[in-house]
Length: 258
Image (cartoon, rainbow, N blue to C red; front, side, top):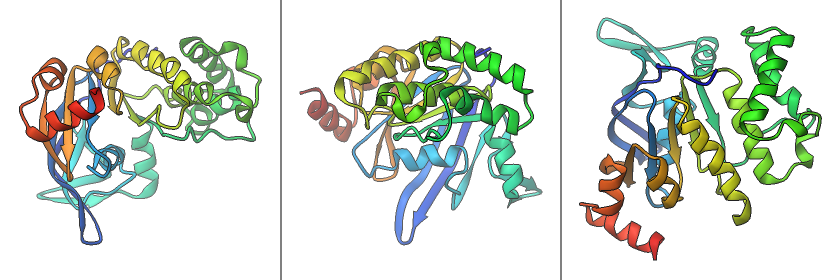
């Protein structure tokens, strides 16, 4: 259910401004299908903004992003790109699961209801099928016994694992994680990273913004290091983490690993 050969992300010359501040500066990046890309960098380097452009939560000011050849948020006509209507953008987002820092579960719903809401609303599945998929995903994240619990009664780690299951419920080609452990107490971080590691072996394309260097070392196919809205270094995780070339990468890693 989680396997998919799709999920090739192509980011080409993307820039993003907030007023006069250039949050992303001519970013280009290829993310092959079925791989795990970890994005590192100091606060304010553009990591989360880049992640949000991949599913058009932030519209880009220059450049474009494609998933499996489809322009995200736009259609091409000749040499011009025209922004899609909101309904079409929402249809595209079905293919891109997004896990936020702060879980964003519906507090008035049970865990099971949180998981079946989107597949039924998007008419992907009927209620019975959505319920079957939800239980299968609860097995993946190790929380089948919490199906009937209210999400607000769960620990932070459990809520984040449910948020991951909910993002998977639409069977996306790509999964985006924005600092998925930053809101958690240290003893809960491992249980969430274990679920993401399991996904990494499933063939889904993952893009993870994190400060967890051990996780990046263990799971990432490629590591991207950003400073001031630019990618200053990228490559295989072993090379970037153990033999960084750029002085800013070396400086950052020496601080987080010391």
